[in-house]
View 1 (tube, one colour):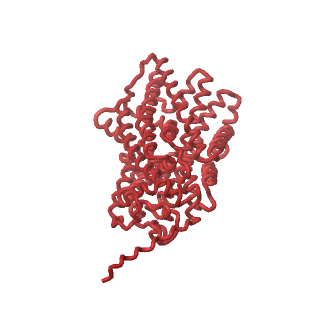
View 2: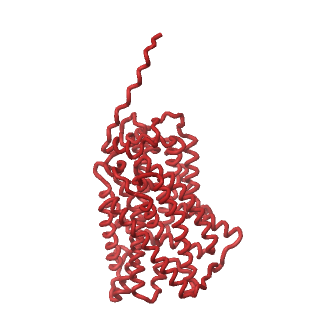
View 3: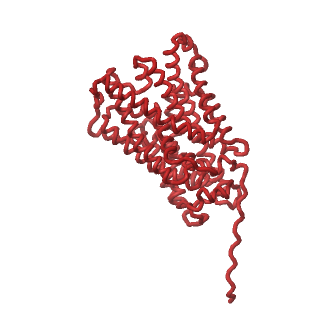
Length: 497
């Protein structure tokens, strides 16, 4: 018997980067400057929105008092905090954005499915949020110059002349900010988010002073017993669903963090702390407006419009418009810009993907989408429910099946021997788990018979997809055995750039 040592198996050559999968914007970043405050500011921009105000105020309107609302929102945001930390860690370790992250579980070409679903939702909401911000500008313009009133009486494609002017002005402003890339986005959000706190605290202070502190903390027709607990669970479920889209693509931002501590700390201050504080201030303002005006007003712009001071109206309208721009940038622009770049990396970079997204956001005539309950509930609501199953598959594949061992260079190659080539670039197991869970999620979200469970469509879809994928996944340890910690910024920067 020969005593010669066995010859080591030849190392696999470095994979060739495919122009169908790679461009510098999709690669791990060379610099990581998003520290704790930048992550915190990101959440301030996303949380401090008219949509979140309306959601929190709506709990008061349906009969939940301040204390039940607080606990319902806290439970929901703690689940979101947990999910964001999981996804944030994935992005920080690998340095890759969501469409590239989806290649791990769905395959290098199968990832187009989750990327396109996320892009469609984001583009529609990008247009809707721009439209909602433009409404505040219209109110502002009419207060400053009442002679503009005749320009609100006509209609072209469903929007008045003044409406078009205000909408396109905000659309162009956002595009200018976004055209400079992720670093400018970071700088914009670092100051835009905190400004809204000034408006909300001033509004709450004004209402407390004018009412003499006599605020009705219990809403009209307050719920109690089983109805209250069910409404609280529904509020927690809706909180999770509200952040389901960003929970999916948070790695678009966390990949710029220098370490995981910055991600977790930024998430902690931005979500459990900032979200619940903002929601409670929103409820204080709503309760104060009920005591003062005798009606529950869930739109802060409408409350500001009642303030008998033009200067206050101007400042409030401008800052709420800025808040909407902030949430639009965070939640509805970065994702489709990268998702569309993922379609054709050779021809579409981040800026071109963003420009295409912005143009499509006008083409869909978002005011018509927003004013159509059927469109919002069935189309956008159904697609939103699909995000839960995507999250379930991606999280289970990364953390339970692969245990964080990711071969980052193989995410950019079409080599059939690549780890994420699967069957012609598509993982059939991921699709087999995703499809039935997506159908269940859509049914829960849009079928009237399941209306009582609609608040939980994202959560139940995610759990179902996660369980199915874990049950049918290949866990025999044949994945490339490279510890995830060794595929952090240093290795990926050297192997990809």
